[in-house]
Length: 131
Image (cartoon, rainbow, N blue to C red; front, side):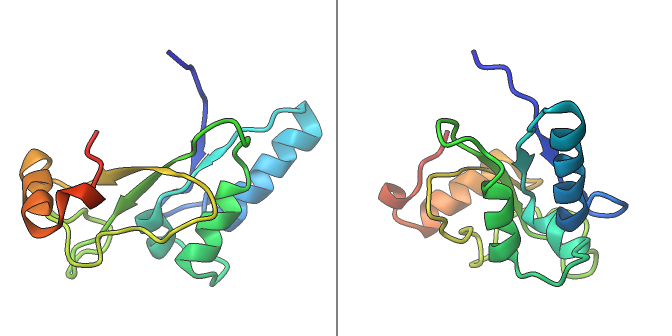
């Protein structure tokens, strides 16, 4: 078992991607501690203070991870009428953007196992890895 501490951007408040990167640099400069950032796309959509697109912010967070550790990020979609609330099921926009290295995506939906079954029915299972 590997113990790991990460920090994650939030959907409202101070810790946008831009600010969490500044906070991380403060931790490095002050305490010589480099904590990787767990990127959350929905939080970024709701609290983007730098007007970067999702892929740019995702890659900025990806740069905070050591090469020998597989990054863990969160992917979800908000409801149309309440963006901060996770959808029950994924839409056709499910798949996260590609990156220059492997990322483990934790996918967040309210319907849990039912959402996984729906994905398996809609997409070729050889393209999905369900952990």
